[in-house]
Amino acid sequence: MQINPWSSAQYQDYNRLREQFGIQELTSDLWQDLPEPPYFFRRGIVFGHRDFHRIAHAAMHDEPWALMTGLMPSGRMHLGHKMVLDQILYYQAIGADVFIAVADIEAYATRGYSIEEAERLAIEEYITNYIALGLEPCTIYFQSRNSDVKDLGYLLGRKTNLSEVNAIYGFEGATNMAHVLSPLIQAGDILHPQLEQHGGARPVLVPVGVDQDPHIRFTRGVANAHRIYNVTTTKDDTVAVFVKPDSNVTRLLDLAEQTTAALGYTSERNDAYKALYLDDATPDDIDAVDLALAGQEQQQGGYGFVAPASTYHRFMTGITGGKMSSSKPESAIFLTDTPEEARKKIMSAKTGGAVSLEEHKKHGGTPEQCVLYELFLYHLIDSDADLEQIYRDCRAGDQLCGACKKRAAELMTTFLEHLHEKRTEARENLNRYISL
Image 1 (cartoon, rainbow, N blue to C red):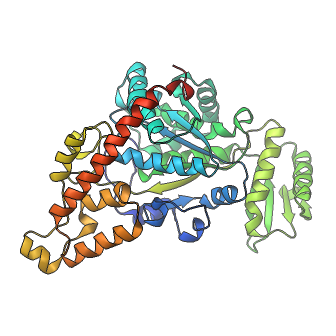
Image 2: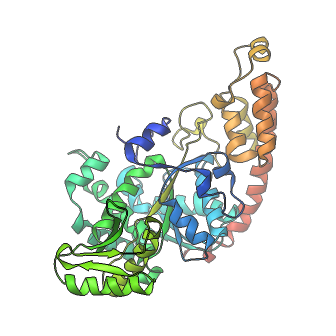
């Protein structure tokens, strides 16, 4: 099974994706203690993760952490894109240092847009809507203008190779070289918040759809390849610190010994194995040891990147079924649609109703296959109790599709009218977010 971050494929077998690519299930114990757990956790929209426990720990203990995300300016912003913004807004509210990359280089390399076209779309369609929906000032940048990102992407390439990139992304002989290089720019995006001038070594969360997991896997591999220390457990669950380079082993073990002692751990040292074994540490202590050593690496002139954490959300179904896509206007409700345009799309939306009114009342509907129910689930209904009532009434045949369409259209009209007002105000504040 291949995941292509630039395709329009729709992925629905999330369990298979988790199993094949090592994505962990996001269970409630990981998020239930966060402040006011948001709908995308409570309703299972975010279904998987890598290392989210590090983010939750940092957020709940008021420790430094960052959120890194990007937007691809290759079409109009629709409700599927808003789902990512909802996550950004929540994490910003609980303490994330937010970085947002405008992927204009990637749009040029993979979608055929000029840098100028990508910038215009990013400002008019995305950044303006982000501000209108509540984003507070943060770091928003264009890839093409950010030397730190581009330089880092180039330098990171030294510890990867074409075979690895091809295995992850499935590039072929006809793939243009700008496209081939774009994963390195993505890695520069994801890792640069940990450069010392941008905040230093710390946990960084990247919330994505599962189609973007190749970028996460690639970047985590690159981050680990540039580490000096590897913190892991042995077969008997002893926490061990291994020195990766073959030179300066004695000095590096000395530094590791000092760093872990400052954390309160005693240790046994084995220079022959380039290892330090922590006597009183448990596997639960690995993250703290790893973070402290990452900071030490940066003091010694290394990168000291903590492998980025990630979460994975389900995709919204398009209005007509299939994937919601900017390239298929009939499949999406855009944030710049008029209420009337949105209403027409909703009234023609694919539903989970039975083939006839009689059958629907007798056997009930299938909300799991209903676009209207997804609109309620993802965007329009705040109350979990109200949403559950809609679900039960549909399954029982008491809730008719026409009534759901009317309610969805009314709620969408209210949302779009309010957003239109906020967008006017947002345009006046763009210079607080980006350099124009």
